[in-house]
Length: 513
Image (cartoon, rainbow, N blue to C red; front, side):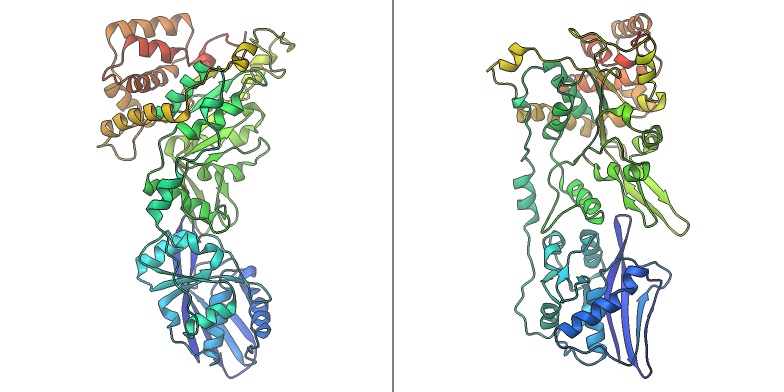
């Protein structure tokens, strides 16, 4: 007898429906076909142990399991549950009241029949609704994640017997229902870190406000203990809230990577990823024999923070250059090509020299001649070219630390950032995939960032006297456009340009002596 149901395989951040067929016929042996990897083939042992644990029999006849389409590779242990249910039906041990073919069924079985969570549930649920399936039967720990998708029955099951009871009509299990919008809007403003707890550093807060308002990349240069990491961790709290489509796309990436955790639902806050400097290039951009998203994709719609930037391997930093421009990463293998979104803000920090005290107002730098420049040269010119703001961070004085004066909160800063972003949304409403000043092309910079004659004179003087490189020109114009947006100005004024010029420290000739 033949039994059939449906599962799914995830490639990139999209799902493909697969068909699971089991046939019991005369003969002997267990055969699995359909380009299954080792973890899928091992399901025979898990399925057999689970069935025996609950008193069911594994057929001793010829048993063929087909996973279609046969030209797509199947991997993982999520096929255990549909195979087990098809084995029961094909051997006439399951009296179905609900048709197996109406559902997507996935779940990993333990030897005692308990279901373990799986990865990539959200894109599978989206595809199941798109294809018109009645429901999605899956482990209870994944149910809230799948329930983000409306108009499809999400059936949570704890064990194999729960799934059997549901299909035989003996269970009163109800589909999980999640109010996605209510859950999203109630949790999107909850942050552990707030700028009101930061004493002093007003000029750095201003620079980070500009960074958030224009979606710019930034690097902070300063001695150890100046507060670079502390300030960076607070950047998500001043970014505009995620929109519902952005949250859904971000959640899909985290679901595919298995980063959502138990009983997780929609990602409602912008991601903040801070990988250690020992990370490999594959871990950063994604990859592997079966490509998975890397840190730059997990930071999609959020912040990627690279602490102690010169300590990262040069090869790791260089692979970021293309994703920073294209806002996505494409990973090619012999039999597949997958694409992961990677629209993130790069925030980096570094010491100015190996000892950390170059240009320190109080402590003496002990680095030898040429050492500072050699240290800075670990960051390539093309990568530095993609960073808009260079912010010098100085230590906070005792009086500022001990001050009881309340600092401006993240919510107050965020209000100004949202107003500036609204101006940019209106400005780029006819431009495809461009919605912030940082994303402007050189042609758009010339059109949008026009400056007056006094502004041109100031910029000319700055470039000549400070020895600014040519690559600084566009960056200064983009940042000055953002500063004008924060001020609510339609035109770029001289004072906006003057403020933008001071954020190009590393472009100055002889900055490192």
